[in-house]
Amino acid sequence: MSRVCDVCGKGTMYGNNVSHAKNHSRRTWFPNLISMRTKIDGTVLKVKICAKCLKSGKIVKHV
Image (cartoon, rainbow, N blue to C red; front, side, top):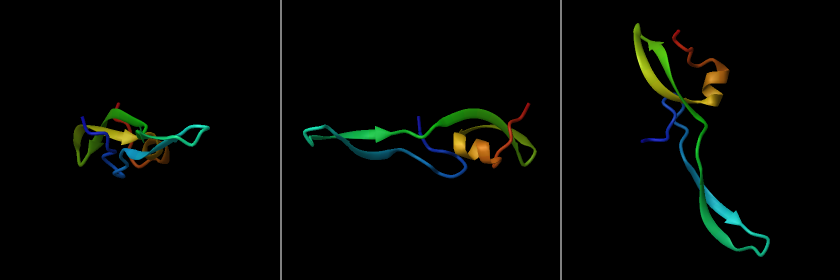
């Protein structure tokens, strides 16, 4: 399953957990993706979009 927004392309980010003793271990941050149905060019499609794109109104839910 791909964890990428279909609208803006936001995906997984990588970085480090840093403990109080400054030990580093790798970790990941996933985008806040929502799977929903929307109407694009007259056809109803199921897309994965991030919450930021949904809130900004780039895509409208199909009822």
